[in-house]
Image (tube, rainbow, N blue to C red; front, side, top):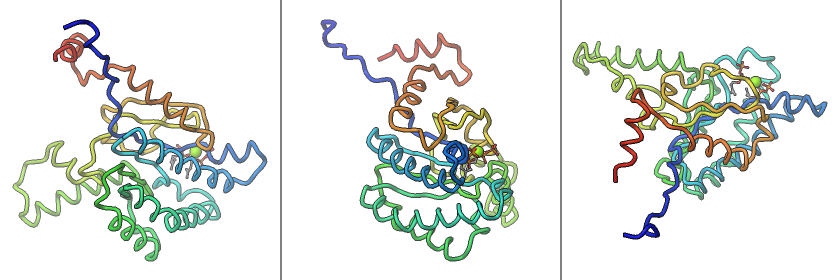
Length: 253
Ligand code: IPE
Ligand code: IPE
Ligand code: MG
């Protein structure tokens, strides 16, 4: 075999990218505009990133759209965010469906208006068999909520005798989280300069590679996403092993 036969393969892409889309408000304020203007600009970035991730054959893109703590914002901003969510949903679902994108929502829906909950379920049902990219939108989501609802679901099943007692392990919890069936994020991105998780997927991020950028979400673009992915590809994930163990493993055919 000559050396020409060895074609370097591209380092693995992340299967699942999870993003905290932060910085919309500051982006608008820098332009002396109301925060709502920033949220609207943020929706355009969402569109671009969904297209880009589908093109790069990323399996799952999760976007944190509204946290369980964001209800603390002024009422006016909360209702603006809710109506932006509803109108975007109405406008985009058919297009997502045509592009073979599967939409899934995670978070506590019970706080939303009936009409919105119905739209969410319909959008999920309409796109459930799509296979290109799974787009996970986290709305009224919190990592604490997710773990609590998983624990509650396990407890309820045990009380009904549907699960043998004393079998609580990580696999069982995983199967009851809002993200069940979805691989844990490989790459976490937070725009907007803060370096914190803000109650996003606390359980699921256990071994995720973290990437923080000062770029505000409305300014985040394909090039910025490519840079984040390249940073991921340059890292060695060890999952508790030594660097040598991993290097030997990946040298094997
Ligand atoms: C993120 O942008 C969007 C949501 C939380 C809904 P922000 O609104 O938090 O923007 P900054 O952090 O105030 O700039
Ligand atoms: C996190 O952003 C939530 C979303 C992007 C939806 P925040 O802007 O609400 O986070 P904190 O409060 O600054 O940590
Ligand atoms: Mg913020």
